[in-house]
Image (cartoon, rainbow, N blue to C red):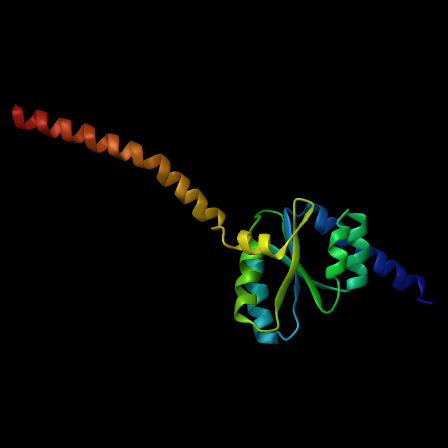
Length: 167
């Protein structure tokens, strides 16, 4: 039987996982088998730059956390090597980065994920990964708002230029 110290450490790990999952907008579970240390370091750096928390977890601890967070639908995916990537600021960041890496690897694969407390399929993760980043979306919206204003300014300038020529 494990000592009380080990049990407390495991309870603490489950509590941290529950807190991470509850605070996340989205999360992705991956099977990280076959990844080299060099590639893992690069992947973690890219995830960190996008404010994505990436953690290798024991399946039993993640199972306990999933039960506490009403994400029991994750349980069938908890076999083999498992890592969880969560984001509390961007819905698509984890899916985008991990799907891109998985497409280049033969052994690294996306298992499943969750979005706002609901488990989503691998197909939905793939669709989510194809969304542009938040910055690109904001730039697109700004351009959409700016285009009519710029067109109006050019029309006013053309009228002013024409009036100057007539005078």
